[in-house]
Amino acid sequence: MFNVNEYFDGKVKSLAFTNIDDSITIGVMATGEYEFGTSTVEHMTVTSGSMKVLLQGETAWKVFGEYETFVVEKDTKFKVIVEDQTSYKCVYS
Image 1 (tube, rainbow, N blue to C red):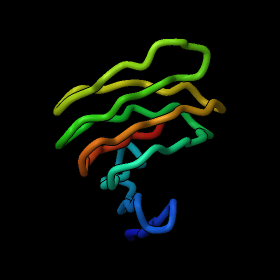
Image 2 (image 1 turned 45 degrees about the horizontal axis):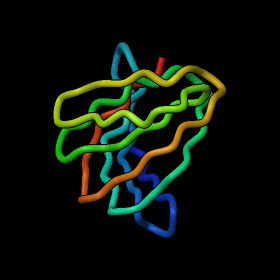
Image 3 (image 1 turned 30 degrees about the vertical axis):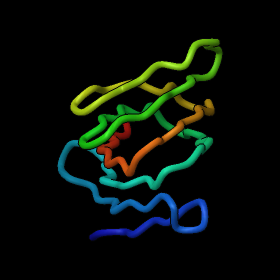
Image 4 (image 1 turned 60 degrees about the vertical axis):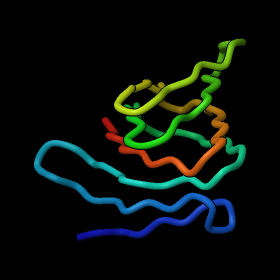
């Protein structure tokens, strides 16, 4: 079934589900700065808005816009800056 997740005092919310192939979340982020940790490889696609992302081990922030995807390795942390409300899809593998 579906699971509703809420983080950072409600500023990040997602709806999680599993289909035949993958575990997926569809979510939204309010304006702000966030740090996330991973337990699996994550393929995150921005579906509306944009995110500035700093992946672990990198020194430069990268901007990802609508329909762009970045990959976060397993057991790492990454930082995100959202300057306007943004939505995303995350596929876990």
